[in-house]
Length: 323
Image 1 (cartoon, helix red, strand yellow):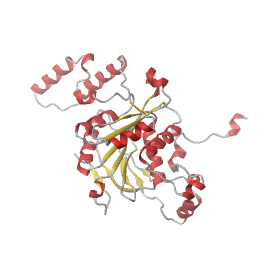
Image 2: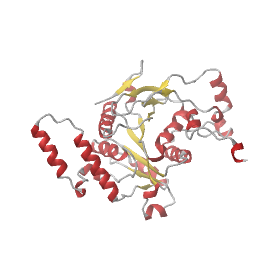
Image 3: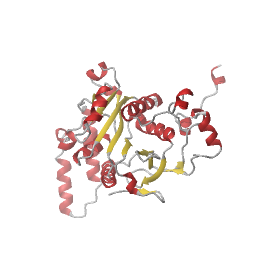
Image 4: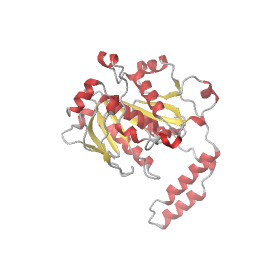
């Protein structure tokens, strides 16, 4: 089901042919933080939202670039009210650049328990209906789960491609020295957790007949740890430890013939702002999303930080505490 709700006055046909950037809620929230940088720096227009019952609802004040990260010209414009952002932020919002080249989704809350696959299905339907030219999926993977070849590598970034991507784009990625993501075997704990989640999912379904209840019981009782990988299409995509919906979303897009590129940054929980900046630089190196003007270069302006980053790690402590 397509759950996109366009903003008043926005024609959804303007999404067709644009490049869609989607964050997957992953370890350290690196993809979402990277999306924050894109939204603050490119000053995108909000063109709609994703109203999906499978995502936990949330509402808050609309974000805006932090004044300390604005150039003098941008700051004067903001103080005069030009380009100021007002209103509310929702759980999943859709933005677009003024030139209509880039469309960006920002997800500010996780999916409900046992509902992520429904959200992914709806998201793929939205992508198909909108007719995006290509999809760029941002994800982060658990740095503690890296294998030997990844630990020896000098690059903390990997990519997963689909057959529908252009050769020119793949050549650009390889020219930057970015390697394809290697597959990582599941651990015993992960397999047991997956088994528990699958059993819980079956038990939460509404079965109204005795025959279906009997079938449910047989399925649950017959589950084995060895049989968890039952989706051949999903097995074609490397595992992304703690990568959220990235693997399933990439798999479904690939299965539907959608050109999709997944960019993965190894990370760990903590201060993930540097990881977000690094991933934003990688995306920019591939796609040239942000090309600063000569004035911005002269003023040393780079990525703008959103105001919401002031509250990422709580309030600052008073230095007198340590005197």
